[in-house]
Length: 594
Image (cartoon, rainbow, N blue to C red; front, top):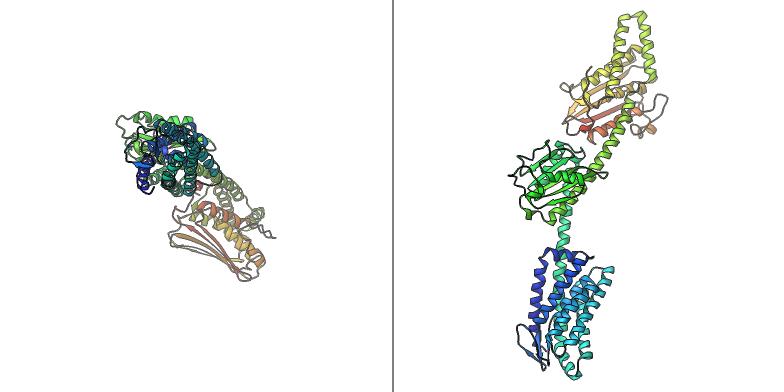
């Protein structure tokens, strides 16, 4: 019995070599990875593991009169002989993976072949092979419903099937003493070696699963990394500039030889091979793109003919073209091209499909965000177009009085009022204007106010040279000055001081309006600029308006800060980026002139 163990171990090595070779076949790896197999996959499992059972029969060790016979390959055995082999190992593994039906098929193939080899245990071994396949498949199916198949479970199942085989040999083989002598010789070695072989076989299968999981994890990580890098550009929508950045990122982070992104009518960006004729902002160079846009589904090409490129010398030989969808409508395509068809494997295809879904989601979010900003813009512009009625009536009354006493001054104030209104109307149409235009708007407002109260306010300007042409949102400075005058000195007897300062700090322009008025009460301070604060002097919506526009235009890169001490005055500071990097370009509609 002991000297049978090394011989059996050699036979296990043959099966494990077969298992390793199988693990390198893509179709087998795919079957192992999926719990739910289709008919064709079940048939393949039956064929593969049935053949392993046949190989186990051929490589078995002939046992004659309770002694071990040396042999290399069994074609037929004597009527008084039996076989010690690893057949149950392959049957158990295949059945656990495929279920009872697969187990029946594997057992039938291996059992029928064992029966044809002959020997006094032929019938018992054939029956035990079929029963072991059905039983192992049943146990495996039940196990999968509760937990993944572990190596320990597979070993216990294989050992149990081998014990059952020994029992069937004892029950069905005549005469019983001959069967008993045989089981004493082969029983323990076959149980141990088949259990050990099942463990090794299952470890190979688990390594396949772990490798697949690692691959998918790396794919997912890469997909999210690319999505994170491309998000700022897709937020700008499908345009040549944003798509060029996305294509560059994908070309650097994937194994594709070329990346293309299109909208419904033209190529927006192409990076990599074949850039000489896949030219952005022109029509489609391939018929494959038109097909994807029309059908709205993923199409893979593995030859130049399938790509249908009009350029005969095009080096691209394989491609996966994916639709980019917004609300189920195909708005463009993402294309990964390869010069070697073999480079377009399942990993690259699945990565591309995942990216296309993420990009489609990003485009949907960008559209929703754009719609939200457009709505906010409409609300803000409605606020910008409003003029406080009291200011208008007071200005007209002041000009009316001056017409009798100082006609020239009345004429100048009428021009200032005209410019003030024009600035309100034009400012409502634009998102950014030069600082000098905003200062002119402030001067027009102050001219009208100081005509009414000549000695009530003293205004000082501290404008750093060189900032006059820098852009800022309209109605940023004027409402701050108006707030300082109207709310800072409602009933002040002494002359009010308002300082307007604009200066540069690093790459930011700081706009500061400071007064020495009454300040803000602690009750109102926390809500000021965040929500409307109603009082006898106004609603406080101007500060809310400024804060909302800064958030929408500068994407969180601008600061709005209020400092106030009750009884000592208030200081409001707005800090905005000077360069265009911090600006949401979709909001910039132009610059108006006086």
